[in-house]
Image (tube, rainbow, N blue to C red; front, side, top):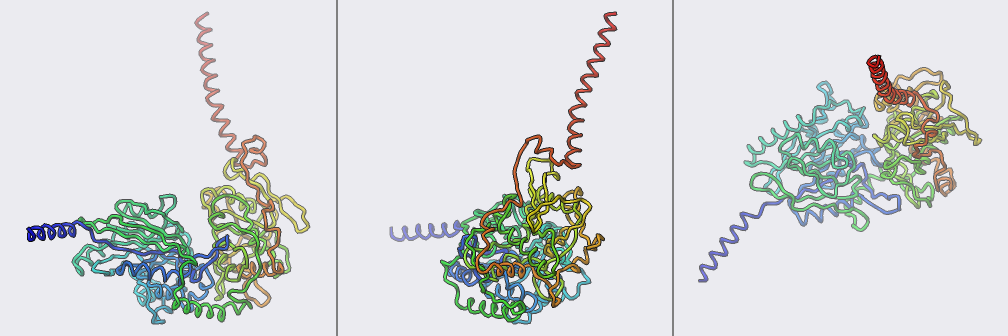
Length: 624
């Protein structure tokens, strides 16, 4: 009986072992954007930080020793550490210290152009540090880009990578999305169709894995394409490529509480700036498919103790930034510029609706103030856009680091990193078109929301598209207002990144609006030479966007100006179907629409009346 019981027990255990699927765990991040240090949100709460992230990673790897850690790109551009991108490759080397097994390039890795990317890769290779494997599948250098191709080879950048962990073969591929390519106009790369390129890479990786390891791999795609509201380029990628088990979805800064499942592929996102460490555990089924065992997002905040070794290294990087960059401006990394008692919009809130934002008022006012101070000439309008607002300004002490993080996008023409301010001229007609972009394009492209200094306008969300602005006035320093004259030139200041996008207004508005930057004499500017119009300081250096904001905050004497405690009415957004409001200051788009509507109404009436006349004539003829 004892022998029989032991045999039954052995068979039961054996059967259970055969039924229980093998599991794998993948840790993931994306869109880290140089956030090596913790940041403060709009409420003054801390989040992120590589040292805190490292502690969380180590904790999860202790529980899952064979876990893989991968990243979805945009690891650079977003804090003061980005100024060391070309000179010491701080971000990539720090990712090696985090233990990232594989990453890819996002659009911001190309912000310094192909030469800047090559410099970063070469510096990283020369450092001798452990670096992540880098995968780039469909956004590749042209054949004549020898410098970039050599740098790719030195750092082992390849269309796919095979990694082995715990006896499991992983095939790592990447995808670069169409929108990401549109956001990297200086990349100098060739975008191949993502679906076909990724499918080819998956097929080649699977073939090599079977030959080398005798097994089908787990296929992970590090995608810089994104999702939005459960849809997007990564969902389409999953539909059109077979064999992908997991997509790490970056670029859109999405946070997915649960994976999206499409064509047997799990799509996951953990949010930007190391706010969360993503973790997914998958069952490896007998038929080669995967199923979800567990998924969680681990918040990274000050409740997690920082890793001391990585903390010490980040302090060294910080000292390097102060020595090599901030010393040029006479500032320190953690120097407090102003005390801010007010709660400003978060970036998500800036994106969410059309509205006047006190945060963005600070930025546009700072640009106008700084250029007038630097050049001694008046500025009619200064503007910024949602797409370049990278972080809010926190309550409490606002530091140099906070300001740079908030205004970290873009680059100038000099070797000194950081977006610069441009001074160009627009006709009154084009200036109105800029305001109409804010009113009409923003609902379909949130990045296009505009925030201005020097102008007051209102927009009716119920009006005809491209005629939603029903009132626009210039605001002069003495408080007076004056109409915007269509044929007059106005001096307009903005950042290099927004300035480079002005020429694309026609495309974004389906060819119905256009904005032509001009010189002071009214001649159209060659957009390839836009940087010729960067505002220069007296010593010939560029007036940086972040420095303009910092200098403006310092001028407040220690406390944020009370005028930023609430909106001042410079942008009024409302909805009204009142005929008066709908037709006030109607332009050609509304007039054309009205004519079309009247024709649509009139034609059936005329047809009916014609038919009735015809019937009357027939009736009269019959009676005769």
